[in-house]
Length: 175
Image (tube, rainbow, N blue to C red; front, side):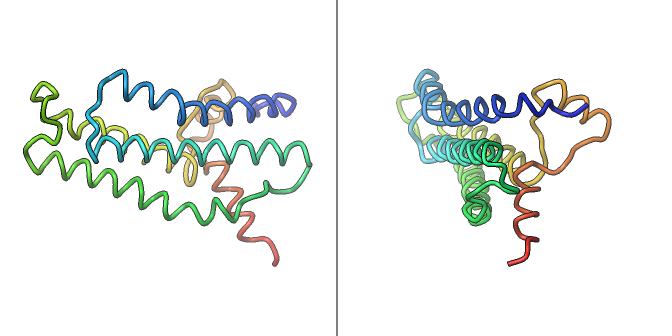
């Protein structure tokens, strides 16, 4: 059973809003509330997640506009194609930075209860989440948050992400 077409505008709108809200409001509040030390590793991980969430939010806005206009493909696919590699560099670089800091030794967050892990582990976790977001948007759909997605997942397994399929169609179109 496919996601009902009449519900797609609301779904795309809510996904766009939630991604942007998570990047600009929820993530910073979580970082502050948890008292994460402001180390390069932690801030890098938070930045990587925020960037991927904003890219995702922009994509869902483009999908909503596509749905309303009846266009074959969403506008802005050149941006998403160009963003794919820099996003990979950001998320993998941040993950390497965070883990490298963790393996390097002394804490970069003095005065934070002497907890060496606090200087890099949250950043590594956020960077790992950013890697999953990168895969979820640009490669394989990992997020299955409704019964239609779950039914399809159990019926036929993982599939290419919607953005990846749009990018494939955009690259294959006659120029």
